[in-house]
Amino acid sequence: MATSSLPALVTLYIALTSFRTRARGVAAIVAVAGMTSIGWMAAVNFLIDSDFKWLLFGFGLLWASAVALYWTGT
Image 1 (spheres, helix red, strand yellow):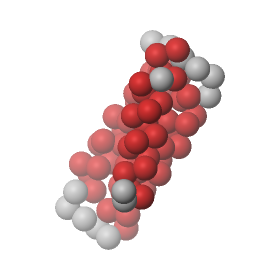
Image 2 (cartoon, rainbow, N blue to C red; image 1 turned 180 degrees about the horizontal axis):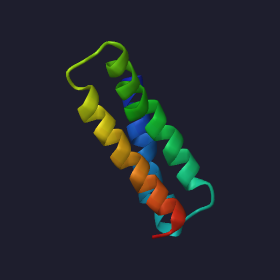
Image 3 (cartoon, helix red, strand yellow; image 1 turned 90 degrees about the horizontal axis):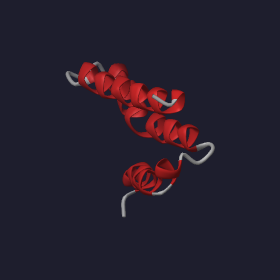
Image 4 (tube, helix red, strand yellow; image 1 turned 135 degrees about the vertical axis):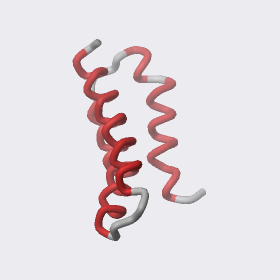
């Protein structure tokens, strides 16, 4: 298994278990998983001036919005 799929597997496991019970600290774990996957991809694409930098930035914003909404309980 490639190491790049690890954040996705961690996120899937947390979504299937801890999100449902709203376990303490789950939002922080998912935020870190998002920063290590989509956040890092977006940052690298900005550094190399890729054509996909804004698309990945948009995905990162969606991810951050979802975590923020979960964190606030709405």
